[in-house]
Every structure is written in C-alpha cells, then in structure tokens.
Image 1: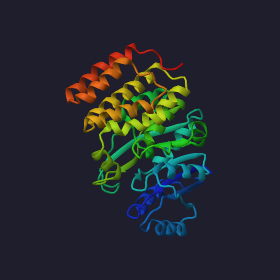
Image 2: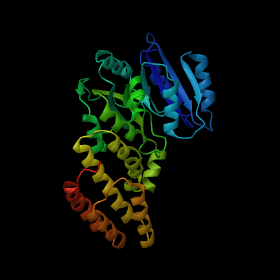
Image 3: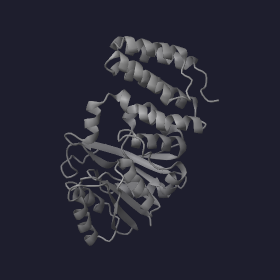
Image 4: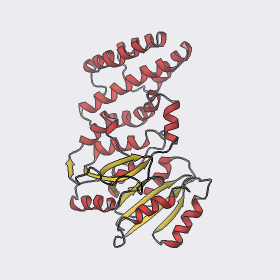
Length: 334
C-alpha cells in the first residue's frame, strides 16, 4: 500500500462529501491507496454517509474511536493505516487538485526525507469558489533537523495544519503519535515541533489544502474564552519540557522553552481574578514543574504580579525580566 489518507470525523455530515470529492480529484487511480474515516462518536448522519461511500468505493474504510478527542482519532487512524505514506485531512477541509501526488513525488525523490509539507489556504469559501491563481512555485526546500522545529517553536505564525503534511510511516514509529493528554489547542503543534526537531522535513512551495474557516469553530470558541497564556501551558509542560530533559537539544530550544514557560506563568497569574486565586495558581504552577529550578528573580516577580497584576507590570516582566534571567540562567539539566 502506497498511501493512507486519514480523516477524523465528528459530526461532519455537511462536509464529508465535499472533502471526499477533493480526494477523488487527486488522480490516485493508479496508486494503491486507502481512505480511512475515523468516526469519533458522531451524533449526526456521518456514519451513514461514509457507509454510502464504502458502497461506491472499495478503498474507503470506516473505524470507530470511542475515546473522544482529536488526538485519539488521529492515533487510531495511524494505527490502522497500511500505507507507506500517511496523509491526514480534517473532514471540513479540502485538498487542492494534484497536491497529494506532489507530496508523494518529494518523498519518492528523497528517501532520506521523513516528511514534507506545503502551504495552507485559509478561507470561508470552498475550492469551487476561490480564485485559483495562487502564488506558488513548487520549489522544494530541504532543511536539516532541527531547522523546522526551532522555526515553529519560535514563530507560531509559520505553523500550518496537519493537512499540509505527508509523513512516512517511520515517523510515527520513531517519535510516537499525538499526545492524547493535551487539549485540542496544542495537539498538532506539539507533534509538529517534535517532528521538526527529530526528523528531516522538506518544504514544497505548493498549496496543499484549504482550511475551511467556520463562523464559530470549536477552536475559535476556546480561544475567545481562554487567554493564550493558559492555552500554551499544557503543551509546554506535558510535551516540550519532557522533550528537553530527554533529548540533547540546541541552546536555542532551551531559550525558547524557558522564555515561554516563565512568560506563561506570569501572564496566567496576572489574568486570574482575585488575590487568593492568583497566589493559589502561582503555587500550583510551581508544583507542575518540580524538575525546573525556577530562578529567584522569577519567583520574586511572580509574587509581585500576584499582588499587582497590572498590564505594565506584565510587560516589564515579559519583555525585560524574563529575557534578563534567561541570559544568566545556568542549564537546567543535571
């Protein structure tokens, strides 16, 4: 089997046919492939629609993941996939015509490359209604690890969704799958940074998939309710901090990790209402990272933020105190 296309589904009845048709426009007729739908406890007609597709197309397979969660659904798809190459697409997104063959061509031409990714197109429209005169050169860039890992860790704006990637099976055998203990925001990013740190990743200047922007998506709803400092903390603590202690990482990774870690602590405390709650949160954050030797100046300033959570105090802490401490801080590893 050459290619496995994995599509997690949760209440996707409105989008299944549309994303499926975009896969049918990839020109895969002569390529051994499979389309794996992972139903994640849908309450609508998703399962019936997928079963209709199975009657039309012998390459379509349906699995059920009773454990709720994006990571859980992705991981089941990876486990069930039989292809040499794995591609993941969210059910409400679409693949640009011919994009999958371009990704496969890169992997075919470069056996040492573990994964390849391209460009993402975000829009409220569909493939049928957007302007297809896109800025793309199809040029391939080969970068040594950990180039992309450090790039994504330092600049979240440069990160694309999983629908832009194609991985070799060995990627998941080498670095594992998606961390199921993380909230929905952070799961993909945590995996991608680890991918970029440990694997050889290529980039192709080609639009791979259309990310469909809902008026109010689940992720957008979470972002509106929760400040970013609270969202990044689980990813930093459960994914990047253990990675730091397990692997021999460059100094740049260490600097990024502890800068983001200490900044997140200060902002979480400042954004919390009530002095007693801020103090309790500060103590809880300390308990969640017992392996970290928190510098004295950071401890002092976090206590000050619990007393005076003013915006200018947060800026002083984030832009001056934390960078100063990071420069002076000895390596945290024993």
